[in-house]
Length: 128
Image (tube, rainbow, N blue to C red; front, top):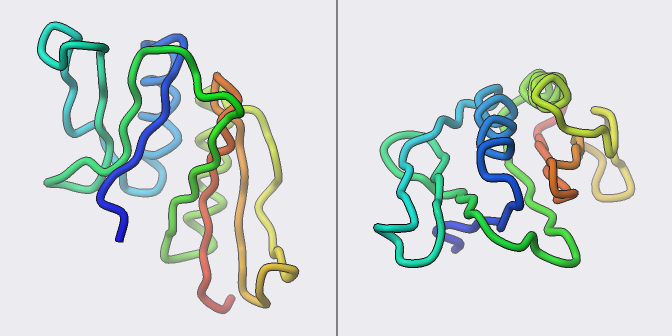
């Protein structure tokens, strides 16, 4: 079981704003922020559902190749909301909301590229 994960970002403020907007649509919020003076290496921001962050961004050299992170959501409407919010927050479309039956018959997902090109997805596995 994965407890938490994260990505390195080149422009911390821009990426933080992107993730606040994009992940807010699926119920995530910025739960913790720590400066480099505390972490000893970089500014970090943790997102999740209260009380614990499970997705982190940190200031640094972006991961190469870019990372793919998928967030499981409960409904197709949440996938749609994520995609719309992520684009409004400065993300680039990397796959509009829709069924991906080549994964399985009910796989409904949407993909956006964050400011550093990380492929961020929201996916619902429930039938329509």
